Image 1 (cartoon, rainbow, N blue to C red):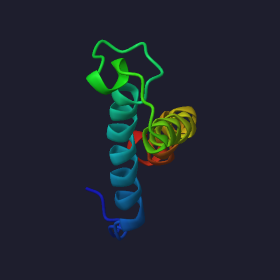
Image 2 (cartoon, one colour):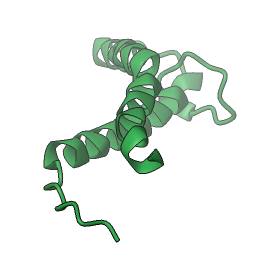
Image 3 (tube, rainbow, N blue to C red):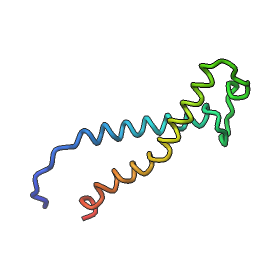
Length: 90
C-alpha cells in the first residue's frame, strides 16, 4: 500500500491543457478558413476573391497566428505529458 501523502493538484497545468485544447480547435478552424489550402472543405469565403481590407487582414492574421501555434503546440502537449510520465511509470 502506498503511504505517501498526495500532492496537491497543479491547477495551472489544467488551465494550460485547456488553453492548448482551445488552440488546437482554433488551428483546425484556421486551416479550414485561413486560405492556405490543403483541406478537404473549401469555404465560399475562400472561393471568392476578397477585396475589402478587413477580410484580407483577417485571413492573413489567422494564417500568421496559426503558423506559430502549429509549430509549437503539439511539442508543448508532449512536453507537458512527458513531465508526469516518470512518476506514473515508477
